[in-house]
Length: 264
Image (cartoon, rainbow, N blue to C red; front, top):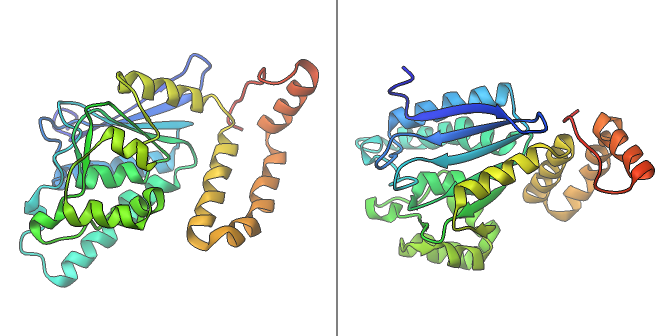
């Protein structure tokens, strides 16, 4: 089974003992989102949800990140089956990915199309190599991106940019995506940079990172007022964590930047 699985999920620890996970699209040369890839991602995200690491890296092997969705997945679907497909992919891939209580980093080293880019947009941070290109090209089969790409792109880049991106089906380079605020940083060696960032985040206050995600999610769903309404409870709960108590003591005794975190 492991030889033919379209993804690879690995867990290891940082020098400071924090667990990190790496989820790799591992079906080159195209890393197409066919049924095998979708099934593998569903299984991997179920495992990650059941036992979250302290940070997660999403990446791909091969020349491309992904050539997009295998169009056979769409062939012959009825209206009802099409709607059920998207409901399933939201419920089993996009929403579980966003709900992970840890920082999630996506590393794009090359061409990143359709479903792969939609997954990237569901991550917390996106890093890219200078040669990376991004596209939501579903219009070539008369479709619109339906795993959350348009709305998450609009959140990062604005609705006008999202309309342009989707309606033209053009490819956009990493520099443009960084200028638009979609890509957080561009690195010549993006894989190394992403791994270093994931390790750094994993060794931080994991529950505080999770609280940050909860507050931003509240803003996404209900605006500033809703985020304000949940912040006292979400942030207040951090005062019960060992990491906050230890970091406060460390700050008072030896100054800032010396605390270590266990994720508890």
